[in-house]
Length: 70
Image (cartoon, rainbow, N blue to C red; front, side, top):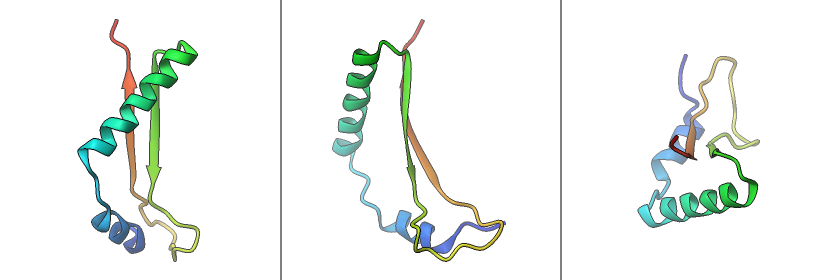
């Protein structure tokens, strides 16, 4: 199996900034506050519908989440 090259290139060119990750986490915390849930997550899927994909390709997914402690 191999990582889909179009998706891998997209990840290599992504600009992951700490401030943006922190903002995502703060928004996830607001979701927890408003829903009463104890955990939530956001998945960033790096497959674009226009990407050429072959059977067996691996698609990168980055998951950012929060969970409450007991």
